[in-house]
Length: 165
Image 1 (cartoon, rainbow, N blue to C red):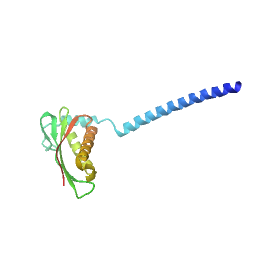
Image 2 (tube, rainbow, N blue to C red):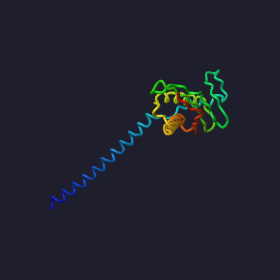
Image 3 (cartoon, rainbow, N blue to C red):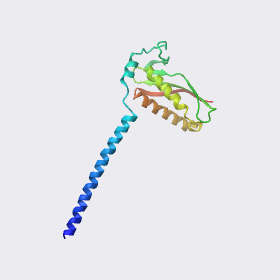
Image 4 (cartoon, helix red, strand yellow):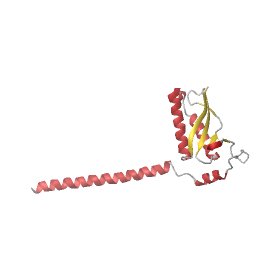
């Protein structure tokens, strides 16, 4: 009888220890996930936002700010992007994109997005963007990059032209 009580008591202690170990591992995993999230996506720098607020919406480029056309309703037309593809490198792509901002257009942010899109297009192969499905994947990838860069300030990415040569 005594042996049965000891066995049942060791089983209940074993269950409690397992539950406690799982709880500790869950807390450690949650903390590690939060830490990695903070390292990979740090909060936006407020100085960049303040600097962008000081820029006149009709900047001509003479002040060291790139000249980007702004239209009505918070739409910014980016300069055309012309670059070669990753594979085959003989093929070139030309892309014209416009960004619709939520509120006042940010010229500095638009230039950063322009550079991000140009860098991304250099990594794309022709097979990835071939056909309607490939074009949709390209649009989705660019929209995702713009969303990450703009923190929700750009509401829509509009493709004006897309040519592969």
